[in-house]
Image (cartoon, rainbow, N blue to C red):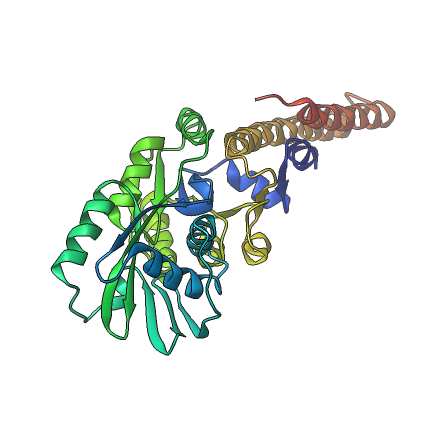
Length: 336
């Protein structure tokens, strides 16, 4: 209770004692990328029109993406509004998890998403070249297709959260042997962010079900593994982890409900604090067990063999209880 109370004062919500203890035995931590390692506010950096002009391409994309709450979709809408563009409402929108979106607009069938959305289709060489160039720069790309014809590519970039690099360094100092990124983005984008913040490993191109399988594999390799995420897509992987950790402010309701721990200020620097607090809590729990069991082990034979009267034994026992309580309350003043 002291550990959970101290965590709450530090901006970390822990939903039970078992989760507080599990934080202290972690050997690896997996992170979602968008909204967790990055600020979750990507911006459109490139508009490449293969057919038509940039304004037409961006207007078409904004009309469809305006029906979605995904950060990438909202970035497209924001860019279009910033350029003074306007559009009508798209209809029959279908979200394809981890791939993109399909819709009808202006009498055309529109598809916007990553390369997985167009599996089995022939992507023109010009589109592939632009996509590969932009991905090499660490950007997320959206391919745009209308009635089977590829119109162009949008590129978006997100920036790492300020405290991520320092937080990961501190986690390694605390004994976390591996930090892993699980992302639906492509390998190049994931690796660019991972190199910038100091992650050990990247697993890219993952759908939500792939993240669950990745967590199972990481659990077999490293034993106790946490998952840090903020979105609906992260919830199944968080449920599979030893400890599921949600970004409290930016996290979806589903992620917060699934998580065992929530970082209420969306501050990853609180994660090393929570891990260190957990380890301090486990140390104090062990100390208290040694004290309480040790006193009992001494008092039973002392009373049986007449070395101490029953009154003295009761006083010593109650005194040891006070020692245990006071020792536990030290956690309220814990500083990393």
